[in-house]
Length: 117
Image (cartoon, rainbow, N blue to C red; front, side):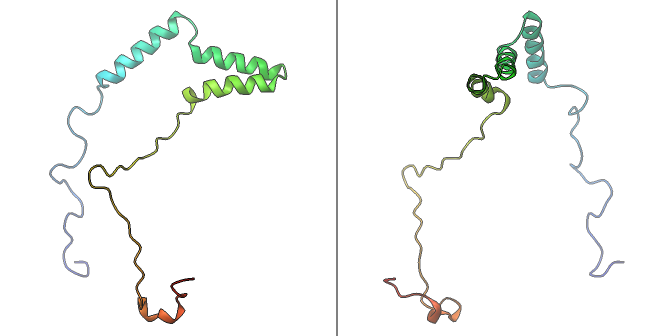
């Protein structure tokens, strides 16, 4: 027996553990529908992103870097989506943050600068 007594849940089957039934093997409806739509669009001809990338590469190969950069700027959101920022709103009762100075924090009051400094 290990030090400190017997271990609880140290291996073996536990209720609720593991993958849930039906989670493997069957793709989700949303994923399969999205894949189907993408395949139909690709079969109909070139996609707008493909055209943008081809134009960008052509400008770049021709040495027209300003035009290539402009097209790359238009294509970038489709290849590299921006990360979303988080906005915190207070609503009816906004959060107030107040910094309070302890006069003798860890008995180091002599190290703190003067209040007016």
